Amino acid sequence: MKARYVPILLIFLVLGCVQEEKPQVNVTEDGLIITGVSVGISELMPEERTNLDLFLSNVGDSEARDVRAILTGLGSMEATPIKNQLDELEKGGSDVFSWDLKAPRLEGFTTDVPFNLQALVYYMYNSTAWADIAIVPADYVEMPEVKNGTSSGPLRISVEQSMKPVRTYKETTQFSLRIDIENVGGGTISYLDENWVENSARANRVEFLMVKVPIWWDVGEYEVSEKGGWKIINLKEEEIPRLTGGRKATLFIPVEVTQVDAPLVERIYVEVGYGYKVASDPLTVVVKPVT
Image (cartoon, rainbow, N blue to C red; front, side, top):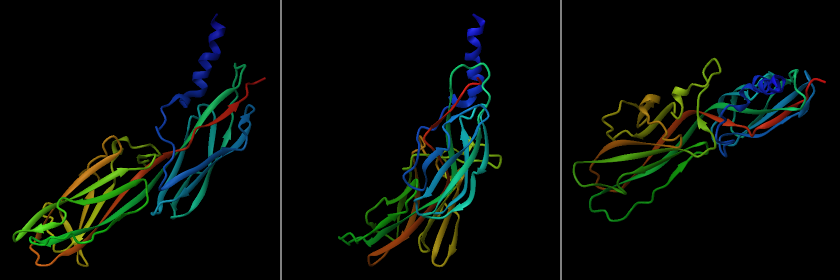
């Protein structure tokens, strides 16, 4: 009876992390995306080698920086990186990461053993947005024409004003800017540290948020710098709400403006920097037992 349980025990020892929890999503539709993953040989003899290739494309509006990839589900299979990192992948660019795979010797097995491999790609990215803010005298009845826009990336930024338009009834008028950060990609906000270990404490937090408003606006509770007719608010990671459920965060910026005697349309700009992780579709490589 004991001999029957040896292969079962070996399966757990050999496959190891094959049963690890995987990200819930596969690829993003914007930003840096995985366009394919393949192996030269999908059925390997013991100690046979093949290459695994991971195809990447940057379809967003920012350059992707510090691009790094790791393989999961290896168990006792060896994987030697041929190329698995890039300093930068420009907008519209593409590249291929590769690993040299070596099959293990599966002593004690009588059937093929599948290895379910998956690549995780980490990168740094920026998303931007702009919005027109209408500010009018108290007796102004029309809404000036306003526009807004956002860049293409795994995080979408949107800006709304609490009053539409902002009516200046008195010497100073207060309103707020609502900034929404939404994860519209298929991955997660994640960061790899210098040792290639994911930093769970930073999960679902953007790295920085910059807001640029006209210099005559008062944003009293925030420290600002001034440059070329603008006030610039720079918020760091710990000052920005974590994305709830990894999907969305909202930030309110209180603003005070002086009374105007004619309608104005002022444009503001927002930029967010963050780390992002995407996962490839699982790829099964079968290893034959020792005969």
